[in-house]
Image (cartoon, rainbow, N blue to C red; front, side, top):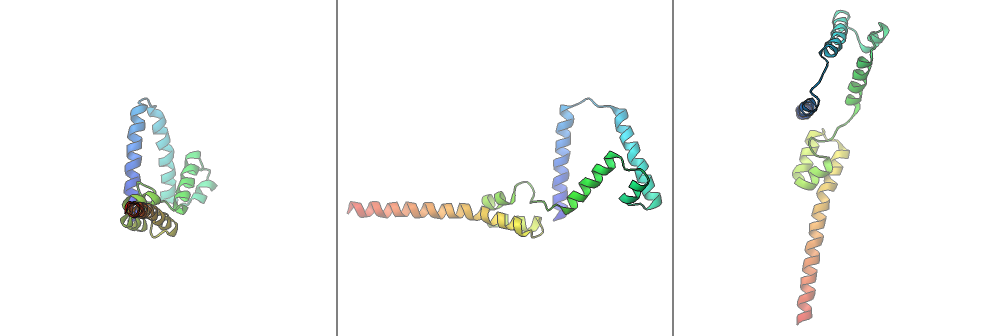
Length: 147
């Protein structure tokens, strides 16, 4: 489940990076190398000292990039994301019961997401049932008025 989510996210980030790179072709190579120098310095510190984020803060390695990375990593662990490509509602609405199964499998049985996909499945079914009832009701009414 998480593997599919990881592959989808990686593909979308790769596609977004290609499109953003194509729109902005100018970059400063020295800025890129300096950013990687900071990262390699921190990774060497972590490898030699088997350090955690709090150890990095204690040794004044808390640069803005490290703090942003740690914040993103902690928010990604706590955040329960939805199914890939479409929202749970649209999975249920467009694909019916199969969409409910897809949502259940890709979100690790997240009850809230499954509930959204069930509502998405129920709305088109209800609209179809209502339209058939209306059609046959009008058909019967028209047939009775003729005779």
